[in-house]
Image 1: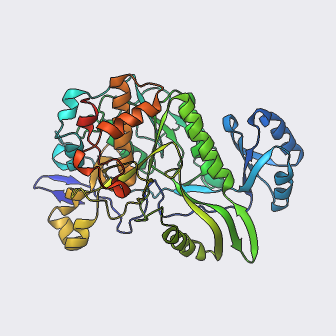
Image 2: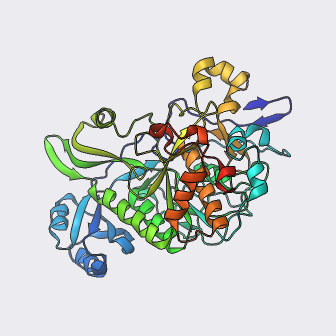
Image 3: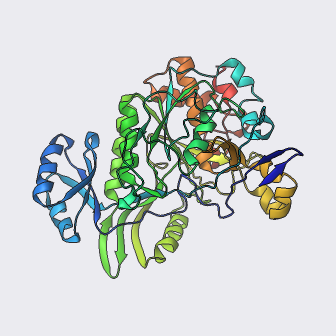
Length: 466
């Protein structure tokens, strides 16, 4: 517990390991020996493949019909049969999307306002002036693909529009979560990540988001542990089918296009997931949705192949695996995505943020650890430096907590895009909305650092004033 001032108390949650909460918790794609992901050449022949799979004795686990993606459970000797099927483009061991770290409960807080702690919102809204220009409406919706949402949180409940969905199947990740029912309406957030993300977009109470009147929907893809990439792909498709205007992805994985080598055996890996993400993003664009993704929190220049190779090699070595090929930061590095890096209160790139030339599209405040590194942990807390560089957001139990990461930068951009779409009538015009954001929705003095900030650091007031 941290005492703020003389009377106020609030739980503080942070990590000193710069782990990715959401977009990449520093977790590489991991595999299970009996779960396989299949991407079909022709999704129109989806039903025929399902019938063929049944005849091969495969158990269908998960489906994304619109892009021809299937997950099956089978013994390893079935993989060659899958790859030989006439309609199979790619088949590989299923890849974990990310791991969500469970966040401790934050203490209840009853305060008239927490605006004084929202240095990030003060910065991007010009001390709240953007709210006076335009704060959005329920005519436009942001779909949040994450760990769910606390629908009863007082700062969020009035912004949640009908249609949220749970995409976590019965028994959860690889059958290891017996509390997961698979019910479509089971969107309760068990980790706090999705609720914190949602508050950056649309909080309208003790704290404020960038778009406090905009509509939000939750597409839950994390239970209490992890998720399969196919669930995230399914959520992108579902959100697009639901006519969501902006899709926020504060998550991701490092995927390898090439070969991994374990115990002397070489195998082609993870192409099904990479291609499926690409198809899902294109599908969403055709449906009129803007897709926003967090850049990741490993301090990596993702365009530096040597740096990426060394980082991934070190992680894979823990499992006795080597690789040959190219590493992708997915979905952030894929075409058609608005990729968001993180800035701190000093308006520098956050020490944890990934970045890269023609990778970063825009930056937004996501917190930092510069003050922590400068003052040390004890002074960081006791002298109040923590709340001067971490980001406050909504917690699952109706309270609030501090955190940081590109996961928290991305939803600020998603909310701003929703405002742009709403005010300028860019519904079903995702490219026009993105161009408006890049042209007007940034600070002029931050446009020159393209590797770190892309088009610049987010300015909501500028975005809604042109």
